[in-house]
Length: 133
Image 1 (cartoon, rainbow, N blue to C red):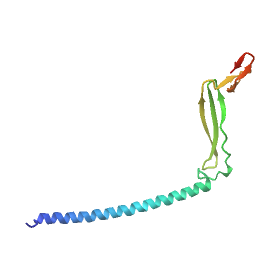
Image 2: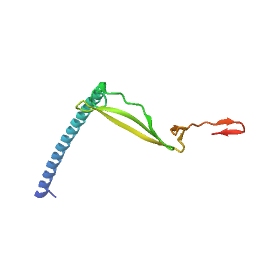
Image 3: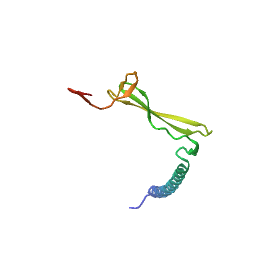
């Protein structure tokens, strides 16, 4: 039993489709390789610039150093810790960034004789007949 003319047309159509599909896949492989190489080069350039100029991409030589965390507010059961970092804007102005968090704990601080909050201490004092915490 031989092929009908419509079968031959269908087979030719399939062969041309497979050829087209192979061409598209080959093009996609080429493009993806090119994009991958481009991204790798771009990342390498970015890492080099960051290493030379610091994380913001601007020379940080004139920026103040970041401050250490310090307690800026106290209460009986909390302390607010804060520090500042600095960034240089494109126009050269220095922008401060405030970073803070709140520490929570029962009995974290106590009021001294002057009414000021002081950090609680874990100590036990002995006295005749017992001890005081």
